[in-house]
Length: 596
Image (cartoon, rainbow, N blue to C red):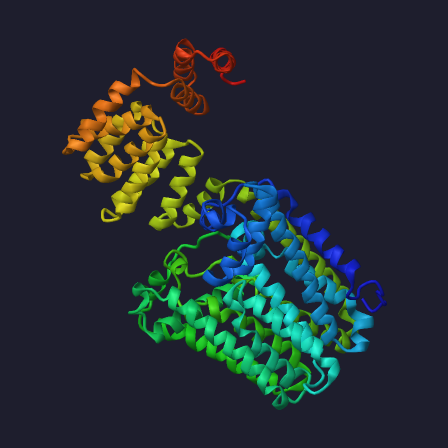
């Protein structure tokens, strides 16, 4: 490791190397679908993202708290449309670029002697970040781009901050400007980078021994912007359900979260997109002396770091560990947010904090090699073993993201008591047309939590849209057993929607359910049912095609053939007749060989 690796220095070749490595690790996930959580709301059903215009582009800077990732999604959608590959490649690209920025920062903070002798240590340590299994979620989950961008721009701001020699120095004007711009972009990507100014100050005081008094106005800007944006975000995430959580409970949750993250950094096994306990579950576990254990343990770690900081030779190592905990604070539970009702921890929340771990690894390696020259081979073997193990785990875990039902099913096995997770898993099964499995999950949720009416609404959504009339009796039996009633208004609205687009058979299934379940039929429902029954026999040509095509896509080839044949018999347009003939032949082929 003491050989001079001249090519391992900051520059465009190394940027390309890290991006290529990032693609080599995560490229196999490009064809994986959008994820059921957030990807839909952020991208797929977001009209401002889908309809690209300068008004919508700049509108996010006025109306959104995280406009930077939205702008990137807008451009990606405008060029590639609703294809997950380009969106995920964007994550892979920025993950590689972020890895490069970690290398550059650590390279610049190293002494000239260590740069020339140990640049391979920095490179290897950054690979630890690039392939760490806990980063799979940040890279593969498309909506997690905001976290990647936040760290990327935060590191750019940090790197430029390191180049500020003095406020009055003309050469410092450029790095000051870039540091301000990139820190602003970092906050506007994800607010969890709000703690970066603390890292800037610690670096000046404890690592570079620079005077911070002349930079007071720069810190005023950093902290004013941080405070303003934090008010907006805290106002948006501190919902009524969190108002009764006291500060001691928040500290307890944050302490549990930090211990969890430390354990997963060292042993990243049994990873899940959603972990078993939500924030209220953790608080409920506070019993006797246990409620003091986690805060005391974290306080002990804090005292240990302070002791290390007092010794100059350990200062950079302890700063890295301090950065780890500081970067975790925004997502630890000190300020609760909605997702923590489902899971108080998440792999993507550690993305920023892993920078601190890499920081410590690099300077600890320097120290060990300087003091114990004979352990170089041990460090090499240990590093390669860890990287190989992490790569294998990374690949196996990222492969689980091949479908929503695969990754959610893995989490559901570990947290079947979580109704929100069960709901998402049932929806993913429904989207894969595994309707019986979906029904089984939903009924199990409602039996465990009879007041969880969202499960009933999901059953309505699932089976009103995807179920044929043969499953109606199964649904009726289920609701009779659960002593539950489907909301009439919800069903009626869905039936009207189907009628408006000519999907009369779907509307008929819903209305038949209303009639057979002995719900009080309103005049509107009764009239609509009569209209649908009459309409089934007097459909327009396009409606016959739409219903036939829908049945074809649901593998109901005989029903599809019936509708295509009826549509052809009443069509007077030669092009339509040719289209019907084509689909009639396809339906017949499928009936003869359904496995084809």
